[in-house]
Length: 396
Image (cartoon, rainbow, N blue to C red; front, side):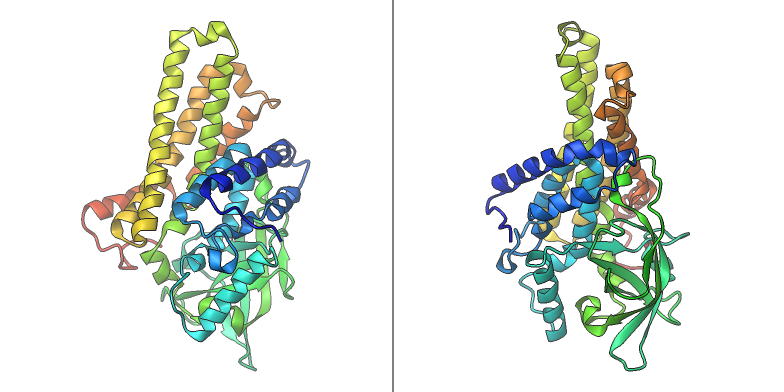
């Protein structure tokens, strides 16, 4: 079993080394010449699956801010791998943050089991939330569950439209509502094993970028899940947890897209520096200056938002900050892409150069939750003093 480093500098060094190993795989995966599963083997072998797991359970115990820094390092090397890796951490992030909090016996047992699966078993988790027509919004979930006749299992039936790490993860954290509870907003999370009978995946979606996330539709046909795999042993509280602490759902991706923005900027700077004539151009210097300013602003806000979450998780200010960070990174990435097109010219559109991939990847931030309009609406409501702890105040 790989033991994670004990200092943040060492963890960032490990992330850099792992990212360097992932980088050469990106082009083949993105072009569909590889299924990308090798990237996740590398992440497993590096021991990074336990970044969020508390130290007393064998992990690195990273908070939201430091995790975002690690994700940015990985994203600068391989955006799709970073996003896929993030899905593992989105699935376990909130549970990892409960470290040190006393829980009821069933919840304590569940938490200990999951941490052991991640650390000792090197098991990868993924989130299975999105459905056709509603996306990742919990209120519209149609996947349903019922208690089995022997009352020892939950039986889950439904379809998910976009499940990253399909065919890669060992477990999927599935969101479902109790049969007959339509419109109540009471949804629950269940841990479904990839080996459970009744699980199937469609073909991996042919995306224009991020093919390496291994994203596909998922069907659950009467899947029987032991009661012990009900998340924390509590039904119906998932939406209310999200309303209080939305940072994983709203901004867990932000570090990966910051990393892609960093890669766009670094490629452009290196491209200009490689030619004395280009490097002496005042026009190109100003273009790089504009890119630098934009990137620094995004980086500062992502880091500040992460620190705010770590300091006062669930506060209105922390929740507003992560929405602001998600919005700004989603704006800055495509803006840098446009700058790079002007600065690098044909090098930006050549499939032989990684910049062409970075430019395509940067635009995907806008389709990941929370979407730009949702971020702005949340921030506007916060500015007007709307009670955002009310589940009815926002379209979750």
